Length: 275
Length: 183
Image (cartoon, rainbow over all chains, first blue to last red; front, side, top):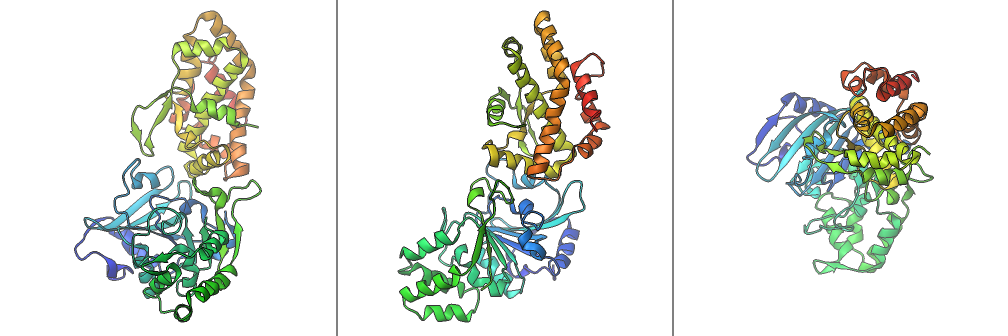
């Protein structure tokens, strides 16, 4: 356990289950493999199949082998099949190790593709806020070149009850700390632009100011601090300028399926972060 | 075109029986009563073709699941994306290929069966091409699927061999022999 990069956020009292060799191997792999981060993943596992350089050639050397999923909802096994069966055959042969207590778990999956030597890792944090994991990634200097952010509950769907939340539309502002090169999302520039144009409030202040303050709980970024010194209007204008410069393209076009989500296939975009 | 929305609509509406659960969740199986089969066979060539396409599509799904599982999700997702039918590969015939083509279709009045048998035998090559066409479709659109590899993987496996009759005059036997001759 000493090498486990997320030991700081293990529950105070926890149980373990599974194959300890999976943990030992993971502790080595996390240092050398490319990582993808999927906040509020729920039961979705599409990234494991579609986010790779064979399907999305643009991500090239950032093609991930380690997929970090997180979801605050601890009990996602309502409905069928249970998560481990969802991910198992015919998709993967799985070996697993997990830490858990009654309301949190960290699940390590070593995944082997059938008829292939291909190996992937899935780390699924259940019962954790996305921001807790983001903070750990920053502290441990674990880079996540690819972020997969589909159906973010804060700005596109249900959720956002957490007062320290950071919506994924603002993750580009974490790019330098997390080493983010690409973001795959259904929320393109159009949705962010309309959000910026439509002034809303959270916690008694402009929602973008509210979120930027939350980013400072994760990172000590100088640019964020500068933004917070601006008026609400200038703050939004600066965000518009900064994030409007991001290059984005539709992933599925000209009748070709490159990346799949049964809710948002047509809207999925690849953002290249070059801030 | 190998797959059409019309076919998938009709396939999805075949009467279902849910018998048990397996590793990927609830198993969705279809079956047809003797009366249903008679109705199809009486309704002309297009309906016989539909029955064949259905049982061949079912065979494709089972073969993919067992012998090229790494492509199963890609094919299922592609169908959902292109045709709007969710998880359609999970729906398979409740028995073996031979149980439907040879046994079930033999239970109908002998004259009707004879017509079905003769019509089907003449079109076996077309039905085999339908199976191969499914593989080609998915290979072109969404995954690395090769019919020679797939059938070579499958043909010596008991689970696949049991799909077909060993009696030379049975349609499932003729289908299997014709299919494997394409490798």
